[in-house]
Length: 388
Image (cartoon, rainbow, N blue to C red; front, side, top):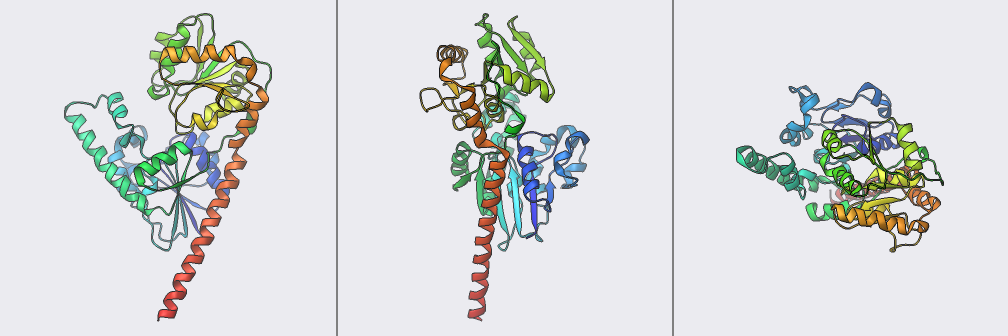
């Protein structure tokens, strides 16, 4: 079985790359393809020495810093990879990777982190945050996104089996591609986060500081609760915005190495999470430390956190709206019901999303589908021989 793994792009080690890390572990002899590869040397460890094949976008002007600007060319770029020599193609896709061209005698399994977010249900948010709602540039952007939607919908037909990273994304896949997806949760390295029963008085949030993470919402909520301490770990484009809103009870630590992040996750009274994520790794890492989560009750968080009052052995509290008042009420509810949460229950819940669990499920899924594919292929050949 000759295997190819197709990844959107390589520019850093984030959630999608954690999945790629494990796919390479499962299929160590697979060849790797990606739109562009600008991974820093210190983050290449998970590629196990592989040098990915890249597209023409790799050599375009300013691609290293502005690769996203070439999104309109990415459908064309991904279709230029010649994968005709492979038996099994695995695409790990949150943009265009699933659009690779495959033939009837090849099996294509696509692990979808999300259909292209900024082309589908998050288009209006993307245009708003990019100041592209009006004017000629806005109309060009809308037209390009329309074309990408048409391409994205069509290329769904080239996938034999979809895997979604959550039930939330499985529903998106059903909505966009009219296809049913199996769910295999992405791998979280829970073994690197150890349980700590004793908690300090502060709350924690940790994230890249970008608009959709809604760190500003958490900051504003704690500004209105000056008796409660909040620690913020992370850096990004919104750092100045966050810094300008912080009050004396809010400590901004910026980017921190893993050991510092883990220490704060272990000691925090609770972890705050205000984004609508497809899955959301940070809340699982916090629970692996025995730390409950106060989270926005939408998206993947509903699958990774056991809500208070909904399930036995709760591991967190949900707030229903992305508003300051809703966050404040959730924090106060958490403090009133703190005795309902145990570090052991949080840890036990997080174990469900371990790397071992992902690898075992994905390996079994891929091999089962490939065996079925081979049987069907042999059956078709036999029928053809009989007919001749």
